[in-house]
Image (cartoon, rainbow, N blue to C red):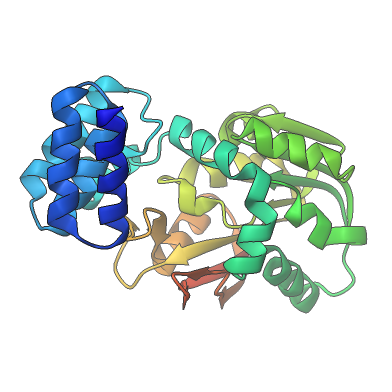
Length: 294
């Protein structure tokens, strides 16, 4: 109980941006419960805010030693400070745990408070560049609670969805919009699809959780019929390649995305700037892509 109270006080200090008090309280917590990953993660956040990267790195490495699957996302913070390759920064266990917890309030929080509109932006882009086109078979990557299928409406025939979070899949199933749903990894899902049958592979606000999108591009290309589309949003940055942003999501340089698309055999149909949501009240820079399979 003492450790719980110390941790709660530390969490409150973090919320108040009193970094030193938070650090002291999390250290006191760990004196009593030295094998508790959440306390090490919280200590790392306080240490980072104070500029103590070595202390933060040591705490994050301890999280990973105690939880190799990384349900808490310690590798993300390590990647931000150069302690892990970006390619290892977004473990599936972390994403699944994050959205399992988020599922009950996902729609109301994302749409109501964060002004999320990636599905609507993608549908508007499809209507703008391919007016009147419908898609007999759609693969909805990272389908969440079904917002993308809802936005597609009558444009979509049979929609098949995949998401890492079983709880998200359960909510999506209740919509009745999907011909099939699967809880699991999107690359494995794509690998099991018949080749050259899908008309649209779509990923709304999904690739920000995927450090390496090249395999997803290649797998999507295999599943698409000639003239089929890969449509998606990304969060962007002004540099090169892919980086872990301050929001602990993946940010892709647009030129990097274009290069990967070309390498996978796609033709660039459209690329638009697209703000799909807010973060701390500020627009999140992003882009929307429509890629066509030859």
